[in-house]
Every structure is written in structure tokens, then in C-alpha cells.
Length: 75
Image 1 (cartoon, rainbow, N blue to C red):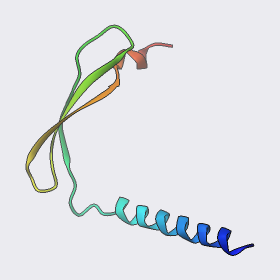
Image 2 (cartoon, one colour; image 1 turned 90 degrees about the horizontal axis):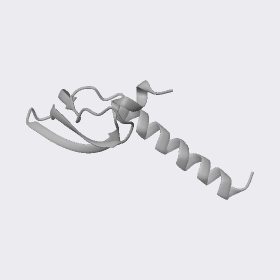
Image 3 (cartoon, rainbow, N blue to C red; image 1 turned 180 degrees about the horizontal axis):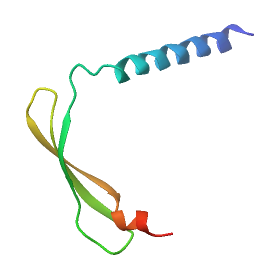
Image 4 (cartoon, one colour; image 1 turned 30 degrees about the vertical axis):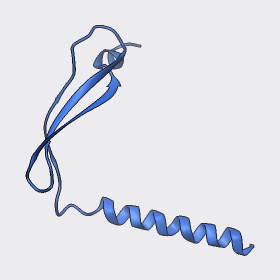
């Protein structure tokens, strides 16, 4: 095994462990208050809104694009 492959493996392992450490940190979490999206019968991309309480306890809101709920009901 050459040094380049070994270095890459070590770097990827460090990144994986750092990700696990962050994922297990549950001391301060956000709380989702509501998820809303416009009603539609069609499977299409819509703008959804999420209201949540952040780690500091402040209410926040974010909009994002997603497939409508109608998509999950189609075969």
C-alpha cells in the first residue's frame, strides 16, 4: 500500500469520526413547530415552509423546495 492511499484512508476515517461525534451531540437540539406546503393534486415541486425553535430558543422560519406530498401517493 503506498503512502498516498494510506493518507487518503486516514483522512476519510478522521472525517467519518468527526461526523459521528457531531451526530451524537444531543445536548442542544432544535424543535420543529410546523411544516406546511401548498395543497396540490399534482406531483410537482412546491415551496414548503418550516417553523422551528433554534438551539438558543429563538423562533425561526425557513422555506425550501420539495416534491409535493401528492408524489408519495402515486405509483
